[in-house]
Image 1 (tube, one colour):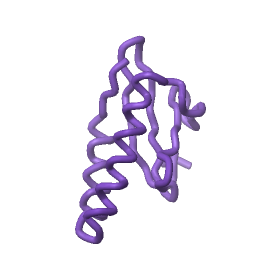
Image 2 (image 1 turned 180 degrees about the vertical axis):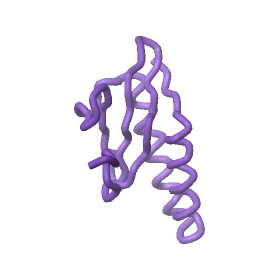
Image 3 (image 1 turned 120 degrees about the horizontal axis):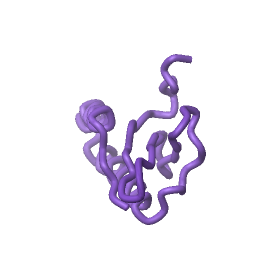
Image 4 (image 1 turned 90 degrees about the vertical axis):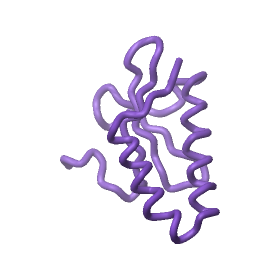
Length: 95
């Protein structure tokens, strides 16, 4: 399987970078490494996360960070990372 980032996920990562990097470049690198390492694990283990709160999605906590990957498996070839959210963000947003 291959991991793809949706536009929303790319925007989430940019928001994380914009917020964290100026405050702590080393902290940002640690968080980014953890996020991308967790994403890479989904290539081999796409069912690693739990069933998501939104139908058709899965949720996976990024170890040692407050972040959560929201993803979907679209076919036998791709895992789409739909969002990268901080655990304190309201999700799903329509609640």
